Image (cartoon, rainbow, N blue to C red):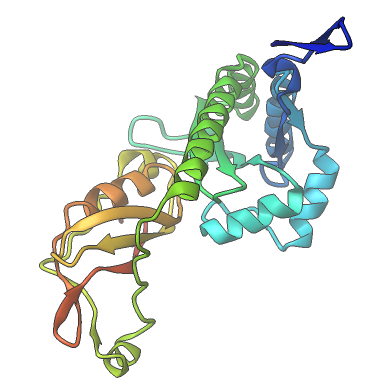
Length: 294
């Protein structure tokens, strides 16, 4: 962009840097995927691929690890958004990547003994605490070394890193738009539900109740990962008893969040009431997922 300034008959040309020149790099941290050699190798592969992106500032891994330990992070892939924000703040990251990687001995009816090397990749926005992307890579072989070599080849192919970076760019744009909307928003705030029925009664409030309870399905993507997690959702229920908004407050990944949101959107409620008058209210719903028994 060029601007021309005229002063005392002299033509002065001031050249301002282009948007791409002034754009700040996105600060991204990558924590080790557990304490196993495979977990450290997986994280290193992602770091190498991230360094090739000119718009990414990769944070020092040793400092990121120290910051994570300082806030008590021990490798969980099932965090509340507030916990995720705290971890990101400690790392001084805008986005960060966590995960798990192991080689496990498996057996099945068709293959008595084999080895599975896997890597679960989670990308989180430090500003919102949201899980913005997850993936699970795996390789199988009758030998541990062969399974790990296959997984290593997949990581070297850069597709996973590119998908992580694309999710980061998309989330950054969406969050920027959301901040602009929030600044100009005049929408009324919806009241949070009291902590329990006793407190609600003391306030003359009756909490919303679903017509019938629906249980989210346990998806195949979670079964493949043997995933167990708790998913919390904040649900805005209108004065007509209809769900108006659903927001993940604790994520579990592996498709658990998506199946939870899809189920909650199908719910219909008897609306909350204050002194007999229907009112909108935000409630917290919790769903505990456990592996189905085989």
